[in-house]
Length: 207
Image 1 (cartoon, one colour):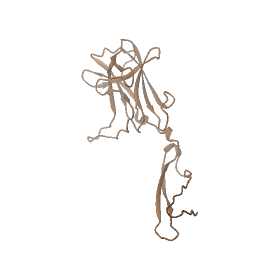
Image 2 (cartoon, rainbow, N blue to C red):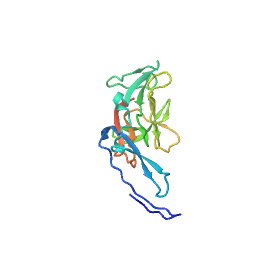
Image 3 (cartoon, helix red, strand yellow):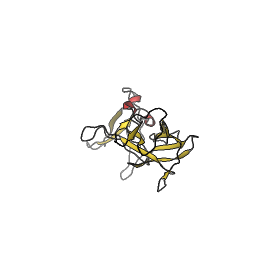
Image 4 (cartoon, rainbow, N blue to C red):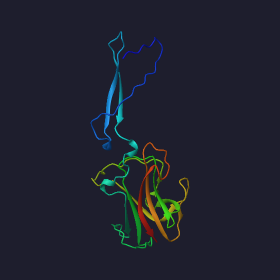
């Protein structure tokens, strides 16, 4: 196709691309190429690269569920992780629950939310070792560290929450039963909770 652009002027050109037939949209393959613009009176062509992603980017998985994340465990005074027994009551002195997360892809918003036994939101989990589990943006975690160990996050909890994302200090919840929910916002969404989030209900914690 030819486009005539007078000297010293500009022109707006709109191009449309179709996804290639090869590659499964569920695997989100990346395709790329370039546009060539060749001046009529010159052999110096201009190359404009482009790239695209096949599939709906809003459906790209955030949490690394393929290897079992997120998870819920407990830690005792010996700092060893162990499964939580059925009908267990924590005392937050000898033992504490631990929420384990691993991000396989970046997310515009990551949080761990705490609800009471009536499903009323109490706040964002505040971890003893990692601080507030409420982030405006969280990046993908690399596979392994320098020692070859899998990289993931442990959020040790002792009953504290941030009552709001902009709160400056945590508060301690009264003894009771609480539901722990891990939430990661899907890409290219407005961030409406829970519709625009990956939601993982981790079950209840009693103390």
